[in-house]
Length: 157
Image (cartoon, rainbow, N blue to C red):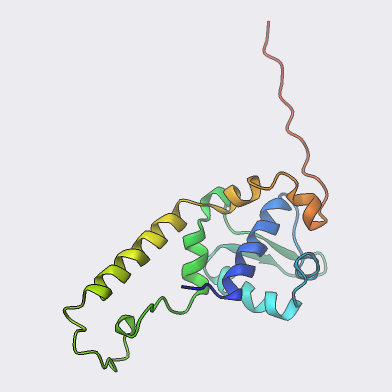
């Protein structure tokens, strides 16, 4: 199975927004950071917005931000919005045009369905926050200002 560029850049866009926490992100900035066209990102933005993964703010000072906390957006959430099909073989397709005489009793079909289920299960274990935290210098890599360091107060004596 191979995920589309749409899914790849949807995850990247969400990672950018998560790294750019507390600020609105602009599509031209995201496009420049990843070297991809703005038009392509605008196309991806629509299903992400519709699914509530991002929010858009219109106007001169507008932009995009996560629609919910980064630790509440799983990779599975993104994949199910951006991928059209998970048909790993013709017997997965719902168009009724299956030529295989074993379609109802095939071990391959069951194995592939189990594999797909395991794939989805793993995707639910990872969030956008996990991906951002795995890259300690993500802000630098994306050309973003460093996130303010969290201050830890000393315990009272």
